[in-house]
Image (cartoon, rainbow, N blue to C red; front, side):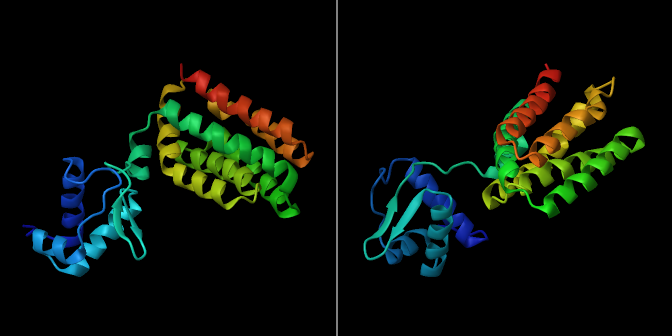
Length: 222
């Protein structure tokens, strides 16, 4: 019987354990709320909340008029947890996918406001690279890269980049500690080149320059 709180979370974990143990196979229909509530010693509302949680974790699926079915035998790992555990190379490869396509789209969709944002963020980055502490420099660098992604005007790419930001920030802190020659502070020209390609409405060049820049950063870690 479930005795600790929060009940819904405890109930979800118990259902997940029973699915993992083979009690319900992939595609199987779960017993009804009343049966599960009696088995776990909780209320039906707690079971409903537990099912919603597991549906969000892509383990269960509620089908109107049919019931609740098992669609996976284990929960997908939480995205934030995946990012926290990712190493620097994984983060850079993720950035390559997001920012290369972001730069490509930005070259065809950028607005005058986006171009103004490029000017501001590049100027801030240039100043920060010269004399600012690492944390200020990192924020200035991230602001430019986010400006590129937001200029793509694709909500999914922007959301993905924003989700990456905390892990990118930590990766940059690690990279700067290893960068005794301060090479990463001296790559302003690569950032200017990305902005110039977007300004020129050249999607292939913008994507190539973004890829070259991030690939160079990745190579510098080897």
